[in-house]
Amino acid sequence: MTLHLGILLALLCAIATNVAFLCKHKGAVVAPAVTWRHPLKSGADLFRSKWFAIGWGIAVFAWVLHVAALAMAPISLVQAVIAGGLVFLTVFAERIFGLTLEPKQWIGVGLTAVGLVLLAVTLPSSGGDSHSYSLAGMIAFETGLLAVGALLTLHPSLDGHRHQGLFLAAAAGILFGVSDIAIKALTGIVGDSGILGLLASPWLALTLVASVIAFFASARGLQKGEAVAVITLTSAFANVTAISGGILVFGDPLASDPVGIVVQMVAFCLVIAAAALTPAPTRVAAASA
Image 1 (cartoon, helix red, strand yellow):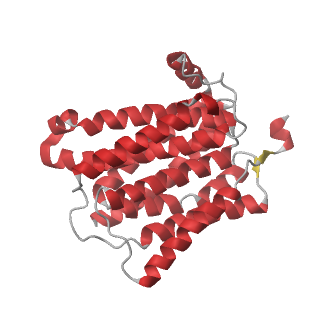
Image 2: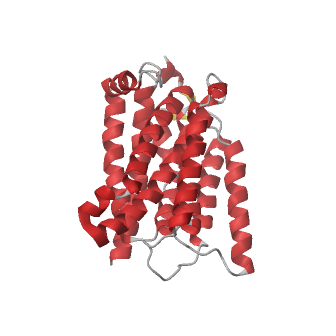
């Protein structure tokens, strides 16, 4: 029952996350440009935008659902459900938020979702404690990817690059994945040591740092790029990072049979191909006017 509830919460999280991203995009594009030199002012400017504030509120609700799902189910299974929920993005974008997508962009989002789901579902269950992890693996994985995400966000050579929005989307996705891995560890710590153990854990500080950088990277990425392309890349990198963390940190095994290995290779190829098929969609004429 707990596992099924975790899956249901992950599905609701996926739906809420996509709606939140689209709301934040609608608000971010009319807010002043985000700048790291004035983070407090940039944050205040974003929240003065009604749609961004609404999107952030929905994102907080989605985050609560995500944490609850991680506490009830293995991270690879949770991410599989959330990855599959990416297919809602295109429907919401066109039907509710007035974005027009070309057929190849629909295909790109679909391939991303299918690839991530195939990757996740071919990871066999470890059958053990889904909260236990390798300390050395956690330190190496989290600090390494935190550095990569921060570099993609802050490196001066990427400022003003024509694909800056996509670089920021990748950075935000990596950092969200770093936060997810840390949160998964924290859910186990709370169960063993309570609130005091949570407050004393270094993974809480890591979660906060990764989340703050991801917040600004995501907001700036939504300002620099179009909604579906940025959201798709953010989701893809977040899920791949979290699934990789499940393997390297929490010991989720890879597929042991030849068919499973081939499926996983195909899954990675689908995600890579999808990245080339999800350029920026265009707003409908009325919305642009």
